[in-house]
Image 1 (tube, one colour):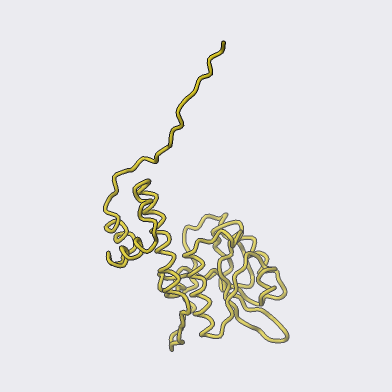
Image 2 (image 1 turned 180 degrees about the vertical axis):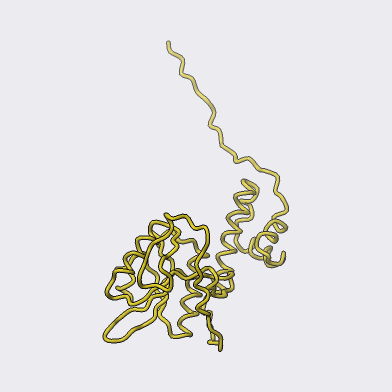
Length: 216
């Protein structure tokens, strides 16, 4: 006769790890008061998860809290115009730039554009030969907008010929895939849009010339 082997059913129990000072670690990462963080953790109903993987728990809570902070700081932000101007001398030639980053142009403040990627190089060439664009510039690093999340530097400024007039536009984030933007970058773009709305200057987000012209 064959003997049938049997085994008693067993329950897998997740190991419980030593929990560090959650409030202290979260306070260091988020700069929120301990009482506020304690309320968040208690109301989440997920505090028990910290005993399974404390490190992952702290990372997840930090990400959620930071996202909430960004939303609170930037949602509905309003800028007011000031009697200040950016000077043209912001557009100064850079020294010791590798040749493969330089794109010769004819319709910009300088006779070349310093690019940071192949995507920017392609856009600079397209802007320069487009009959719809009178003038354009890759905005220098000194052209900064103040936001609650730090300073923000849009990518391009363009002057477009349109219906017999010439309009100025600001262009943001000429990256290959706008879907890959981090939440912090999206929040800064929202601040940039609000900033230029106060100046009555259209602000668009696009990755190529067709995307820009479709919006302006």
